[in-house]
Length: 168
Image (cartoon, rainbow, N blue to C red; front, side, top):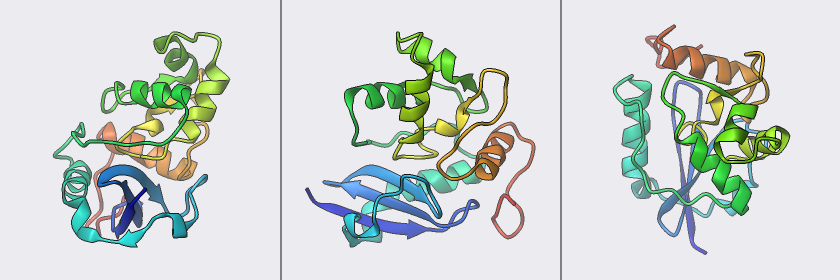
């Protein structure tokens, strides 16, 4: 399996983009819970990520609300079903873990959905930040709750990137 990676700047800090056989398979923040070891990312190749870099730039410039990139997340069948359901949550909206479990036909699996959500390897593009607790509280996020809060506020128009490009 051939992998390549690049690191790009974003309002959230550096993002490591990883491709497997030329298809986006990971976007990791720094730091990021469940981030694979850097030696698994393959060779550095910024040229392999033109569309992803462009679309992420448009997202952070508030010019894009949905992504149209081929994706290759690696996970179990259940995890991939959760990740596919995440892509259906509209920009600026949220669902609870229980609601997401119902959407995939597993109404009693909110906890398992939460675990799968936490293992999402393609953050931002597969919007795991749009899943919240049943009472509306922010719970768990691989990039940290502060980033989750900023992404949700950003998508709701509560604040735009600052002049220096950050969301902080």
